[in-house]
Image (tube, rainbow over all chains, first blue to last red; front, side):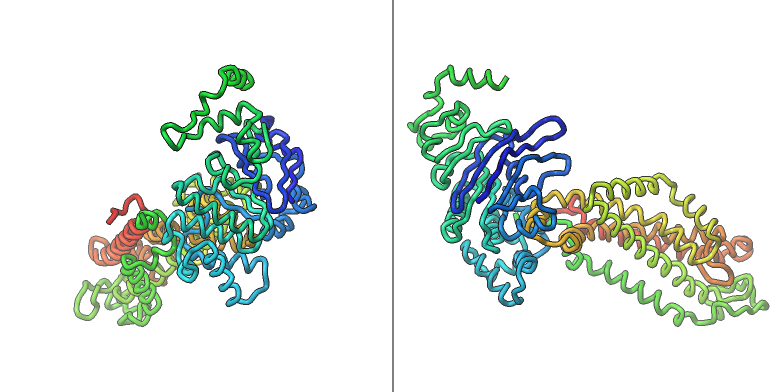
Length: 276
Length: 284
């Protein structure tokens, strides 16, 4: 269970994340949506302690009762490495370019387990097989020998290797085409079922949210403007900003619903007013 | 796509590609020559035969003899070790010190980085020849002191280079993932950071080799290097200076040797730079 209470991230006197509260239950998939610069990624980075040193964090983040924000860096690393894992948008950067995928997966196992070499290798290959990659071959491959989709799947394999409780996926599909993106999300969904994994999914693309997420939180200018069950938020958004986000989804068919038309002019103006 | 990605990675792997074989071979050859050079000398480079002094190049003495009647060719060969051997030693230590400080400074960041960066900046502002001359002057003449003086000048370049590469690389996601994954900082630095810097470091080293050889020869020429009767190309140039009108071969031989060696070192450097630097390499 992930608990974020009153999380604030500030750069000098400017608050980039303004006292947000979030909860993710075991086995729950939460989509954190919002436009670029809304503070989604900072929230994700706060959980892992990945914020740049210049940014100041306050509030508490706890995982299964232990408060991550008060742990020492090394203890935090131990908890995080096994329990919480990440997938990032930039799959090119997910692996060190000159080390084989296998060695990099092995490194994680070595850091957290005492298993012997052959056993570790089998685990790595299994993890790669699980995301439908030819495990034996990918194990000895260098990152540049894989395609984007394959790399992102290998990144998922790496993230799931230690059977974590929480997966933080920071826009994992933004750099992928929509078919590959769909596949990547399916693998995460599969792992979620298998491991009863909690997922924090940072996204600005609401198209996939309907299909994969359980709950949605919408973030804007450092605040969570709306959160709730997927259907509630997507079908009857309470906040004008959510409506605008939804309206920004391009319709798939030329006769598809143009949600922008459904928005009253008033609500948009109110929104602009709030902005100023 | 693949080749572009591969070409964009300044990684250590390129070292072992085919094009790099001949420069690497050349370095090996030089090392071997430096090692066995004393055995190659046809005569004792230190034996004085005053009656034979200032002989022109000929049958008995391939390059003639110097003002004390010593065989010049043998002294040239003995000088290989003093000049090139010392340069390689300086290069190795400069790289070791510079790379270590660069890695620490770049990866640790914060206060460490500020301190190291100030030190690096301070060293960068000193004109290298003058600093080396002052330093070896203070330490006193001799090969070992010369070594210290030149290392003190040369490590900075490596530290700065490595620091900038590490600063760039440590922002990448894979470092964050490795940290999150519980990989120890030492391992991250050695396995994930160091190899990124090696390509650049080797190019700088190869380009530096020529400069170091010149610096050693220059410092020896003004008397700060190995002391007589030791054979070193720079000091041999100085010894020959007095007899330049009557026996020009005394200056020509070490002069040409220095020139050719520096030329070769620079060629090697250019070759390596083409190898590692994506910008100057033509895409196939």
